[in-house]
Image (cartoon, rainbow, N blue to C red):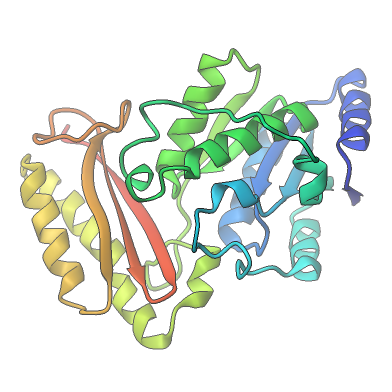
Length: 282
């Protein structure tokens, strides 16, 4: 498997693939991989001839006091996992390669990034869209795979790609969960055993909300209150938000009339966990 560290080498490699008529899939990651990431790589292989995995812990999507320095990293294990699913190439640039001295350009998506995680992390999505735009420019993929666990990120990237006329197909990958229902995340390693038990309330509250909608509940406030009670009963989680939004605009819904997403973010100790579920009243 090929490992590339520079943008110029990445350009050359991608140009050679395109010249040979190969379709390229990009799976962007920050490393410390788990089965959720691997599922995205497998999905990429079904849509392309060549799968390129990027590993880059992007400093500009971390806000002040967040865990950039402590974000878990394990290069050797990541490489083994990527090889195990048959990906073709790893693009792993250094920070100085992506943001050289004098760098001053930011890509921003105005409205869809402001709700949900954007409320408490106001600079986060500018960092995400900027690095993804740079990865698209560097890797030159035909398609890119993003997980639905980061639902707002997925929608922001879709919006950016459409607005900027980028010739990249965005492929969503389903949430992969641990046996106890917790959505797979690199930050799950931060959880103590007690926090891990309490964190199961996130997915449980979402599954219960879906069942309530299936049984006829349409009041978003009722769903949010039920989830709030479920999570606060564990007494270890600090709720950032619990919201029901339109899947298209990510604007808050009061009544569920069409396909909606229930999304939440809760902090357990050092770990800030996000999760979501799509609610379909029909």
